Image (tube, rainbow, N blue to C red; front, side, top):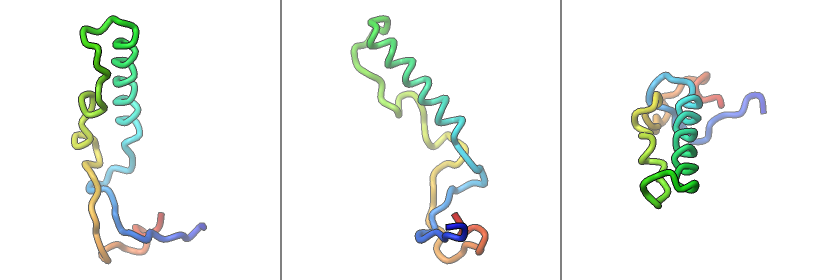
Length: 78
């Protein structure tokens, strides 16, 4: 599988390679709020939704897009 190709040419909109650190920070923040609710320290009894804690559109990749046949051979590789 060293030369496997993308079947569907969908890539991130910007040149950022990863959102890993941003996702880790958002999940940490969400887990902290959940622990507060479960321990009774929070003023609300509802668990927070992921979208209340982070906005996926403010992350570095800013979504994905279909590029069709415009990809080079290098970009078409996984």
